[in-house]
Image (cartoon, rainbow, N blue to C red; front, side, top):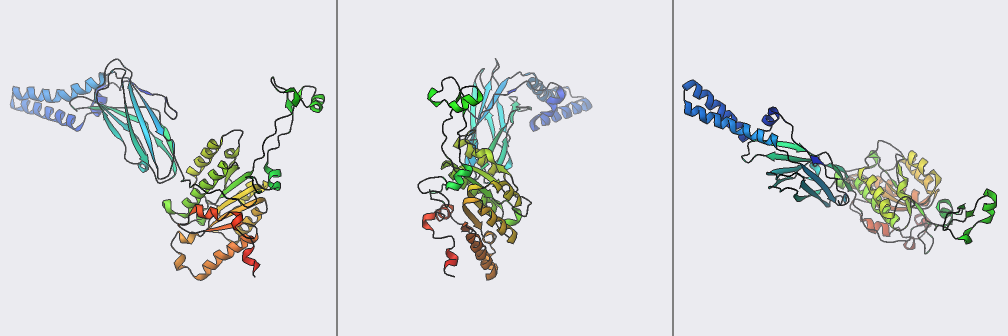
Length: 447
């Protein structure tokens, strides 16, 4: 089966017993049964034999239908395939269902139902006509969500019905799938970021010394190795044949710091400042991975995704998948500061990109300290009051505080990108190009 499809679970025979059949009676079946019992009682009271025969017929029809369903031995297998299994928020995904009749007898009319969360849309239901022996039917439906997250799909529910519609019995499959709705990723233009060497995607020499791969340790000889790579000095030292490893290309390191503090963001739903920050982190992270950076995601809680930047374990596509999967479920934190993130980033980064909300004096100092540990640093500073629609109600001093924060961060060496509600992320990223900027201290040069 195709990737992302469940192995075909089977729904066996329905539970036996008249009680199970009575529970499966439809409204029509219950009405017939009630009418038959009533007619039989009236016939007994009034001594009408003809009415008794009618009552017995009415009561027997739903009971016979229930027993007939209980004795059916349909064996069916169901499978599900997601296309794609990871979709951006606001985009549609298609779910393909397949039902196989693996028994020797054809089925009757079947109703297939798949369980989906309410946020993905209404629960899909399909009526399938007779499925021949060893035949199959395929159906599909679409799901869409504007909210990030991981949503379970399934299990499949199969309902059997008799030809008269008197009784329905349900059978359930066991397997289920998970649809991951990731943040929207906006394509970013290629720019020369602060700290990069001219003509390279790497950071400066200091960052490469801290973060580059330097695989010069010899290893034991393996069959097929070129004898010209034998490292004789190590061979004499260890007493076995040793060869030099192949030199590995230098790769730059980068970290994306996402501020998830609830007190630092404003607004609600997909239009909040927090959702903009998550989408920004996803876009920047994917962009840096595609440019060859060994990228990791760090939040203010200290949670990091180092495996997203491990090229020995993942390809760039898998690295992007790990990053987006983490951002699909990231939520507000209760923290009030960036101390835990500072501990994680203590070792230094080649390039640091931070997306932060409202800041106080303590957080400003921590960000200034983080800047000294990175070769290059870009900061998306969100003016969260614009997301709450409060900027026009705030006094001018509030605008002054936001401007003062930008000046302090620029003095510390950050490339500050002020963000207001509705800002274009590609335009902001383009303004981070170091070739289009003067000194980071330009605000104070004329002072």
